[in-house]
Image (tube, rainbow, N blue to C red; front, top):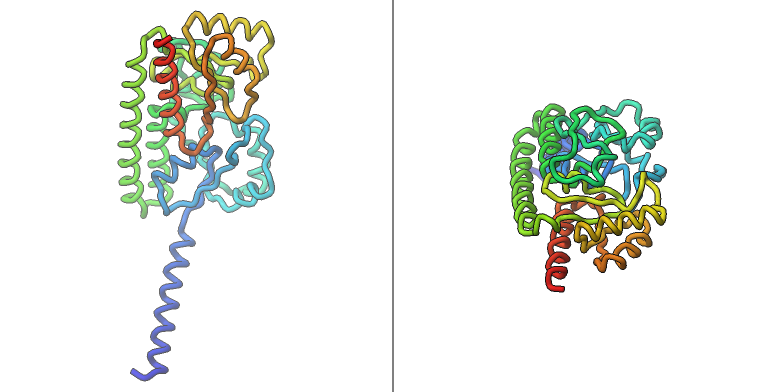
Length: 304
């Protein structure tokens, strides 16, 4: 083969390879989700077959979030939006859909069993009503419970297989590995909570983000925030009394909210203040750390 022929052959190979790469790239799904935990779930199942766009950036408060131009630009690339159906994104979606009117909406919360927002703050295990339909008045923080995440993950798998049947084997294998991680976490959380005395499984948190976790694992969540607002002195007094009654020894604060009220309560209860971020991408690491902190604080309390 002459030098010209060889050069032509190499050029043809390069063009063919580029075409294959381009075709693969063109076929790649871009999926949008509202929150970092959902991005984690989708990436665990989809891997590199899907690009994920997250609407709420790290550290932002979903209750006061205003979409920035860069977020809108990224959302414009998405062909699919995985919605949890909670209504948390209701205030943002008109602006996002304004730049992407053709985005396909896919709900991933089928079978979750929603809990009403006003029922998750001061209830023991077994006292919370469950609802299958979605509603903006329900507690949206379903990803804080590994049991609920398993349901969401199954819905994500089913949706991805329907949207991209060519990736079924990849999605199914990744889902199996992810489900195994969730089962391990589920067992670890059960063991950690069961090791605590029944009367000392109550914790205080500023924003009531862990109602599903508390319900599913036999704990009780008390929230500082009252109907989305800073507590009044009478609210603090009531919560301090409740904390003493339930032997609360830990108060959680989120980076999106003020620590002032939490520190006041912790001082009165001789409790520790610990930061937790329910909106973190690593939601599994977050709930593991939260339950570990409750256990460690309980151990310190027992020694005093």
